[in-house]
Image (cartoon, rainbow, N blue to C red):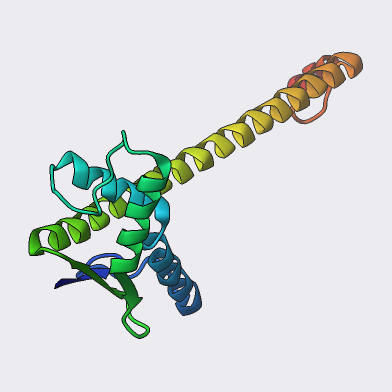
Length: 177
């Protein structure tokens, strides 16, 4: 039995946490711990083990039936321990396997796939935020265009030609005096 331990910092060793709210940071780390344990992520790791050609009960062959795949995910889940270290931004990841190569591969793949998943979440969030901002800009542009049309209609109706609100005749009189 081999046990591999990895520590993962939230932002990186030299970066300050992005969030200044300790409760929010704590909840984020706890959420990431749960994400690292997710069956979907473990399924990806099991599939990658198979792609790497590692002979292990944890490798998931896409040609296997559903029950066999779920048993491999159960095995991955049972051998995996993910715990937050006290109230820090550090997470301990332990995996017990029949060989050090499999244990190291699982931990490395888990971290790699987790980072990719987290990047995709951020990209999706940024795209969604960009789409929302674009919709707000388009709505604002429509409101501005409507207001400009109403101003033009008002000017035409009341023969207003300047921002001072004077008609052409009043402006010409004021210019000659």
